[in-house]
Image (cartoon, rainbow, N blue to C red; front, top):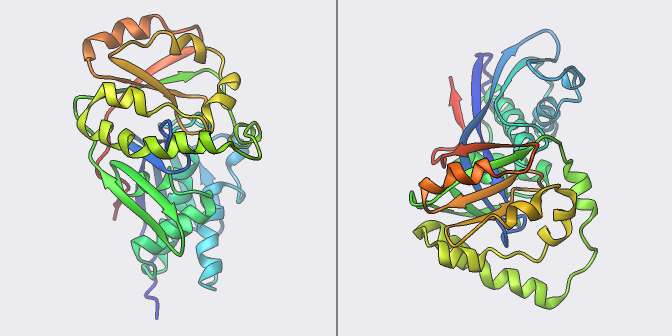
Length: 292
């Protein structure tokens, strides 16, 4: 029998950058930038701390919360949730993944933890549709993940030699729009391009090998189609040199830049096209934190 708890608590979920070049819907990295969710039992479902249009039961946090009650055939326990968000919305840094994780983990909390961490990850990934964002957000570091009867994943350290800078434009891009430009089918040589480079991409990130990483990260499955949606992408791509590279973070529009020489970052940022801001990021190696 589930031992239910009514204890208030807080969940902090890190930002993530997914796809990582050739790792489409597979690779993701967690960063030290967080959305914080505070849950309290209440008479009805309430959401605060976010844009007014999300302050209702259709909020992704509440929908994910209810999903767990539904699959476990349990009566809803209404909660109020306050969202303290540092992660930009619809920018390719995993903001929606944080909402799903918070909803699922809070439901598991209030029901007395009937689900294991791996079971939670499976349900989170099912709601999200793929595990590339949610897995590193849950466990930290760089992860390679896929779904079968469960979510299988491998965790990797990221070299401290590499410095990450999120280049965030002043416009949003919905995942649905970014998905709509992808082709319905792919050529074998494009699929082979990506498959053959995934392991080298991971090794480059682990070892801080920029030469290997620059050669391996060249994607043919999504970036060639999505870059037309990202004003300034081609300009920024031409700014890279032997000590830097870029890739499209998630579905975009944020562009992630990686450097192996920190002294080059300020000059690079100073040359960004109008409408972009830069955010230096450090890899998060812990994942989600539940403050009870």
